[in-house]
Length: 238
View 1 (cartoon, rainbow, N blue to C red):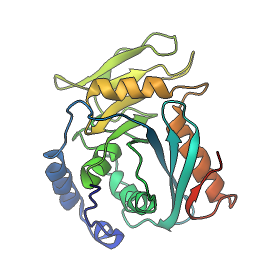
View 2 (view 1 turned 120 degrees about the vertical axis):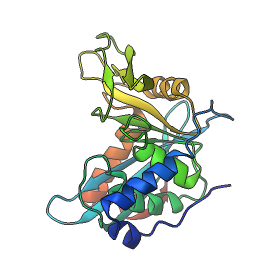
View 3 (view 1 turned 120 degrees about the horizontal axis):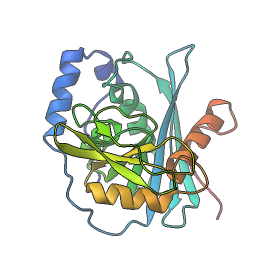
């Protein structure tokens, strides 16, 4: 059963950093990194676009079939950001809009890949983990930047990767997702293992640096932002 914990935008906007840190610590105690259960038939990519000239937030999820990665539906929301920009606490800016996006999807995806981190985070609670614990969903993160830990540069060939470690723990991977591009950073969010996060991501690689779920989410959110797509949930013709 899908679980949504009430986290209204107004509540997040009123949080102090100390309160936000406490929430992260409490959520961190609930993280499940056991191997995945069940088969993935659909995967969603999730992304956020912030308006630099206002507090507007454009959020979206694109649902794709798996493993063939054809977009089958998308959900889009425009809302107002209530939490300030603080490194390490970006989830508090993005979670309220993404919860609205997720709630619009009538048949939930089996897994969600976020344009951000899972446990590859100083407090092991990036956006993918934060969202996954709140909603009790299967999530992973694919970030363009490393938030924590150290790694050796992976090989230059597509699909090569190295471990990201922090304080003796393996918290993710640096993955060369395309020949001669900077690596992306993969980590489990919730209800999957480290190995699961890499196996799924490798299955989602296409011709681009970003895996298809987050690449598609980025594309759809940007089209929404410029007015090409409308807010709400929409199924795509197959």
